[in-house]
Amino acid sequence: MSTAPRHVLVVGASIAGLTAAETLRREGYDGLLTLIGDEPHLPYDRPPLSKQILTGAWEPSRAALRSSDEYDRLGIDVLTARRATALDPGRRTVELDDGERIAYDGLVIATGVRPRRLPTGHGLDGVHVLRTLDDTLRLRDHLLRRPRITVVGAGFTGTEVAAGVRTLGLDTTLICPGPAPLAGRLGPVIGHLVGRLHADHGVRLRTGVGVTSLTGSDGHVTGLELTDGSHVDADAVVVAIGSTPATDWLRGSGLDVTDGVVCDAYCRAAPGIYAAGDVARWHDPRLGTPMRREHRTNAAEQAIAAARNLLGAREPYAPLPYFWTDQYGDRIQAYGICSPGTEPRIVHGSPAEGSFVALYGEDGHVTGALGWNSARQLRTYARQLIQEPVAAAR
Amino acid sequence: MRITLDQDRCCGAGTCVLTAPDVFDQDDDGIAVLLDAQPPAHLAAAVRDAAARCPAAAIRMEAE
Ligand SMILES: Cc1cc2nc3c(=O)[nH]c(=O)nc-3n(C[C@H](O)[C@H](O)[C@H](O)COP(=O)(O)OP(=O)(O)OC[C@H]3O[C@@H](n4cnc5c(N)ncnc54)[C@H](O)[C@@H]3O)c2cc1C
Ligand code: SF4
Image (cartoon, rainbow over all chains, first blue to last red; front, top):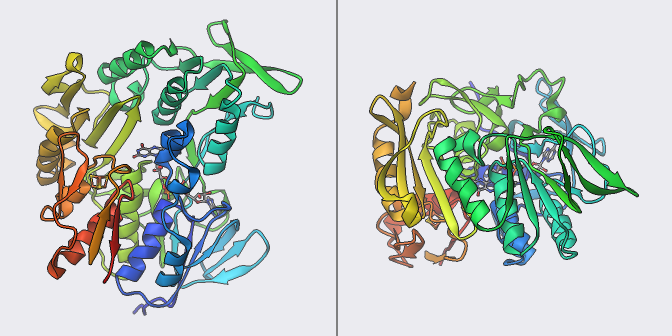
């Protein structure tokens, strides 16, 4: 028989961590609640970083998710600039970087992911990654000097950064190891449309090439050597080549951290320990396989599920995936599973009009719907996807 | 309960419309529109849920 927790500790003070803490309160949990994060800021939202914050359309403070008095009101004790360094599930303690050990009886792991880096070159000035507010402000500062900029990696972050800096009028090169930007996520058809969008805006797009090394002079980056033997001059380089789950602190804890914190369908990693957001690899009952998603909506929805289950709800987490990305003025949104291996079928509008809805699926079974500047039309398909779970897709 | 919606933040996910259709709608660009800024109490749970799920943190609630 388990008793109700009296001290819940949430490690990782971002979208998933904050949402878990708020959900616990919303569900009536009235014990101690501590939210620990290693960044020096109160929780803020990440999607605006590569959009409004990078271009300067928003003041950095607008990314904040809650004002400081809201934490007081909810009775959430937020510890910023403190890093968890170890977990002892037997003793139910988490150790922090200053040696303090905090006892919990419920734990939510929401430490997200860290950007992957190139094997070398990150020591040079002018080489950036983009994950945190501080990363973004550092890059913004650099942009004021109007560098020639190369973005390495053409996933969501890389393409948004390229669009953002190009909007500022900077000389921009986008290095895409695949056949087209976002092709690895959305398939070649949509990928080529994204590629054309960037080319139309004056981005120099280099597809099918990777980076061999960065070149520098006097400690500052000067360019990149590419796998086809060519060289690109650059005063600033943004490396956006994916990310890895922030689970280093869990090494030795006994938890399975193979590509994320491995959880069951209830987001439970071990007795009293739940995980949510980019770091969590849970058993998706819709797909029947372990899944890890790095999307804003998943972070919030999974945190709601994890918090409720920590309090005993026993509800499997079976979300309808959703993400969006903004590139120049265009907005791409998708619900469900948009497998890059399947050819999408356009059911509304057309790429030539700059607005369309495309459906993904196999054997006549729709698994995902993507809208390009078509939010309203897309919602009709989202409703259908909610009613028709993707379970049969696999 | 009073709701505010920051349309400038909204990313047009439509989560709010799916969660609380009596309170939210979307315009042609997908931007959310408040149908009722002071919804009746029986909708409070749905609105709170929509606010928590909104991927743009665009929905705020103030208890009265
Ligand atoms: C630039 C950018 C743009 C994005 N745009 C979009 C978008 O348009 N649409 C979309 O759907 N998604 C987008 N995303 C993805 C979305 O932001 C993530 O899915 C979301 O942030 C995940 O939230 P999280 O709370 O799980 O993890 P995170 O936001 O990564 O937060 C984890 C937190 O835990 C902290 N932490 C890590 N280890 C420790 C430790 N040991 N101790 C204490 N604290 C620790 C980290 O520093 C961080 O603050 C974007 C992401 C980025 C970086
Ligand atoms: S859920 Fe949030 S982002 Fe989505 S339409 Fe509603 S207000 Fe906009």
